[in-house]
Amino acid sequence: MPRFNVLLTDYAWPDVEIEREILAEIDAKLVVAPKDKQDAASLAALAREHDVAAIMTNWAKVPEPVIAAAPQCRIVSRLGIGLDNIDVAYCTKHGIPVTNIPDYCLIEVAEHALALLLSMSRKVAFYHHETQSGRYQLQAGPKLRRIEGQTLGIVGLGNIGRKLAEKARGLGLQIVATSRKREPMLGVEYVELDELLARSDYVSLHTPLVPETRHMLGAAQFAKMKPSAYLINTARGGLIDHAALAAALDKGQLAGAALDVQDPEPPDLSQPPYNDPRVIVTPHAAFVSEESLANLRSRVARQVAARLTGGTPESIVNGVA
Image (cartoon, rainbow, N blue to C red; front, side, top):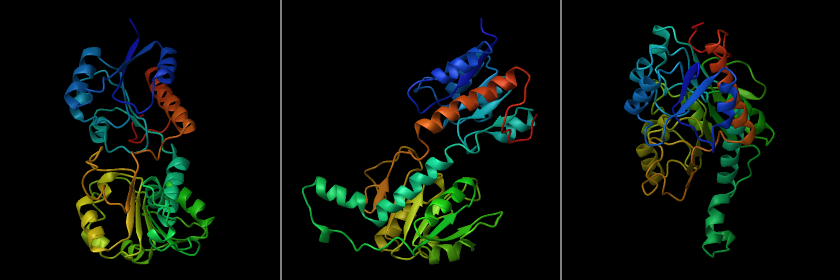
């Protein structure tokens, strides 16, 4: 019988060998939830059945009933950055540390956002679909503009937003940003959201999803954007009112959008805004690279191992020692 059982609610990579190997070092068994049992009730049943000492989660929801079903739980670890899928308040109340990997996939998400910007600006996706349909005609596309000298508005200048700003400056983009902390950064001008929307040729979202930011971009905000501007979202789908985005595109209030995150996921791709030819959709792929995943998985497994063997894991977000 293993010394500990650790519940893995879900994962987005081919196997769990990295996690198993690291946890085996402390005689811990990994209990992996089947894909058809990742709802709260099923996860709670698994947690209770195996009396788990730790919970590791990628995207699955880990509300109070799941955590409460494991009275021996000593840590909840997020395989990622954001914590909106974990009941952090419940964990804090019951002395359970919650961890994440705050510097995970910073480079990857910034690169993906920049790739989406370039694709929209140079109409890469549009021309690809045209040529795949047998049409090889430059004049079929909308007007192209030089990227250098245009304005990128970054909503949320945290770790990822700052990395994107660094890369975008190399292309000659002007950078405006909103941020709670407003820490000085070379080449970045801080403005309020309304001004950012009015001035930007590209708006890229890099803010967490909390009640205050849900649908922070809706009809009123889209009406403030340039008709030639583009929206990029690699953060959280819930930041955007997608029905309002579809309506804004129909009205010509912005030129297009690139969405890596949706609400819900997966979305109905047959419906607007996802079926609009001016919208690029990628399947929550911004965080992925071989390098980022190996780093993420090993660090989270070691957070759990440290906690279960009496140590202090890295990146405790709720102040519970």
